[in-house]
Image (cartoon, rainbow, N blue to C red; front, side):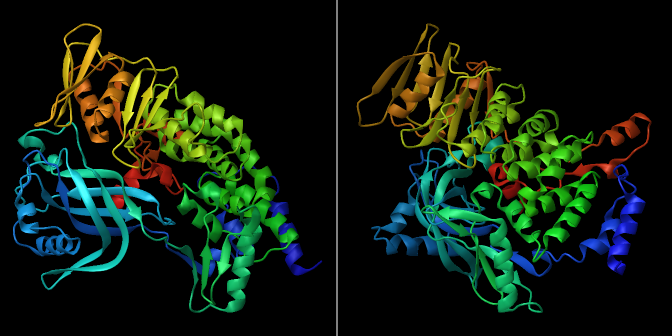
Length: 569
């Protein structure tokens, strides 16, 4: 027998079918020497294009209700004047001096893999020391978004990446001096439009780069991943040079590009069937240990459908971490056996929730769809809305959640589902109103504002009057029932925008006219720590183990990345 074979047999004879290692007995040392023989792509190539790119501009907000101000002399004012003159605005200084306008700083973050024409959120705020008191009701004029730098007292622009325009959403609950900072800060949801695509891919390190290795990496990736273009099956990797491989995003990872990059880097450069079988056995042992379960699951996912069997064993584990990581990897392999354990993780463990819901959205099977639908009725607001967003990512035309583009301003969805009545609005990702429960009504009496010109009023009967008052124009009125659906539609019919609708709903909740829940960006948080059952036992025995709190090892899905972008900023 060859020495290598003798070593393998000896190791299996020693370890055999022993139970999974305890936390203090990780199988890392056992597998290190054997796994080092399988060279992974991540050992020789690093990713590019996988981070967010900040783009900025100096722009003008118009349509303010005398809350704007003439900006003080500054590089930003000079840049805006130049822009206004370039587009042919007459008397730009007079426009800037108007109390209905304000100079603002605009910024957005282009996500990895963004394509030409894709929309993204913009953030607007007035400069420090500005005399503008509020941006509510404002409209961001079209502006070009670039990479900016201020040098020598002047604003210098880099590449123009996008354009931006749209209605400014200010926190509807903000008012008075105590909320002054909130009143001069807002967002334009999906107000940015990318002018060009961003490439993602891999760079080979200078010590390893070669045409042969670049080609080998491309072949290895294309054996694992392919996509269809006009009905033609194509690999996702395209070696461009001796050091660069461009990647197309596989459709299953469109809402989790960070995971896609990790999986690609976990693909072996070259591996025979025998070597793969041996490595799968080793990864199975690691999968059943909570310490190494996250990495093992990802590497099994990188192998592909040949690695489903050990992942199925993982979802039968009694350990919640092992069960979750196994189910998550199974979902990205499009195996419906992951649906039930992922839905259970979303219900029971907040730390796993965002990752579990995103994984469910990738499974092309009714089992996953039905599990998500069942989560629309649970008590947790973030679980319900997270399930809605996962269903929308799975199939935006699903009759259960399909909505409409109301007035061309925002997505509007009325769900016929059980559970506590809830109204959900967003301040990120996409402008959207979701009614959980289709028969929700307001309770009179109330007087609500929807922007600066629309008033919603009910004196106590079963009718509400929605009125629009504009100086120099005839008053317009609509009489509707007390149903929230009819009131929202009347506001939009009279010219109301998404910020106007959100403002009215916020006031309805504050004045107790809305009896159900009102939630804003109730998104599952990917930064929560998980407490293992052993930690809970230790706490019960009076032993402090704060250092044992576990952070989920998976990358945060783009589907719920609001908090991730905040962290980047």
